[in-house]
Image (cartoon, rainbow, N blue to C red; front, side):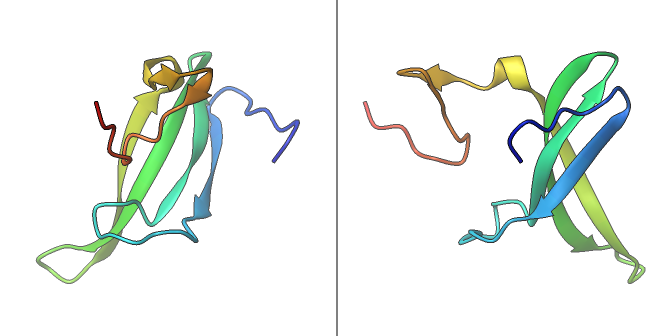
Length: 80
């Protein structure tokens, strides 16, 4: 959402409408913790005990590679 900025200790996740592989997250979004912005990815899973859960991964936004002034999706393959 343009113009949206997370406040500290807040974030938002959205359904991944473009998921094509199991390795891609079911939900993704952003959050801010301690003044640092993170990209958040989540996968819907079920524990061995049958409890549904969402497994999360956080990547500091400054750690996301930039190529030709555009952020690179870490799930994309880069050909050299």
